[in-house]
Length: 115
Length: 116
Figure 1 (cartoon, rainbow over the protein chains, first blue to last red):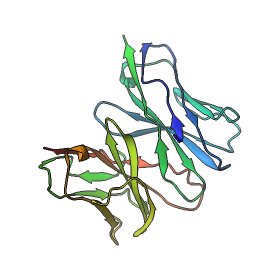
Figure 2 (spheres, rainbow over the protein chains, first blue to last red):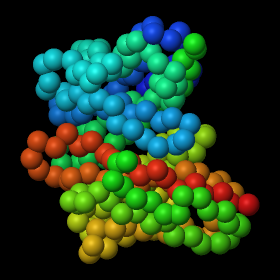
Figure 3 (tube, each protein chain N blue to C red):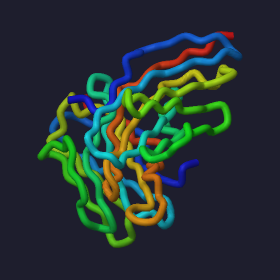
Figure 4 (cartoon, one colour):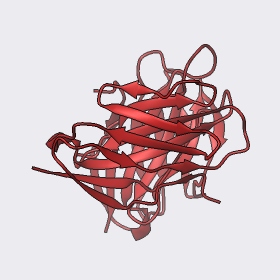
């Protein structure tokens, strides 16, 4: 079974607008971490934001925020005030347990920002 | 710059050949991970090493092998190459166990392998 599901293969967003990327996860482990990475066309993987399963507040990093709904097992990424440089592939990933840092990745969502 | 160095950046070879991909983790990181990214399979975890020992194994083919050396650099060996092995191979590192580490992985820029 897929541990991470990203249902949006591609999205278009207007510059300066906000965009929400969906991510749902599946785990029975009470301790886990959720991550978002950005992969621009150049290919490198850039860490954006992290949310721990026990964190009470939603994570925020600059223009990135994570809408964590534990009961629904969702961890959506919100990018506010989109910029042309935000055009990239975005991956949601999960670490299960403590001491095992392997990340399982979703299929990714391609975001294209329009001027 | 993540601090993780991968070589070579690009590699073109023929079916049946063998290649070695090299990774130097961030200074101080004990764990090294290898991932394969292909168009049809997405990002697939291959193998993890922690301080020289194999820690976890994913979808790694028997034709592939890896090791982590005492200086913590790692090599991924791919043999009897097939067309389907063409992919972007990422190395990532993390601090490893303990402390308040979130488990964030720092990725290298990848080695793009093309098998002709």
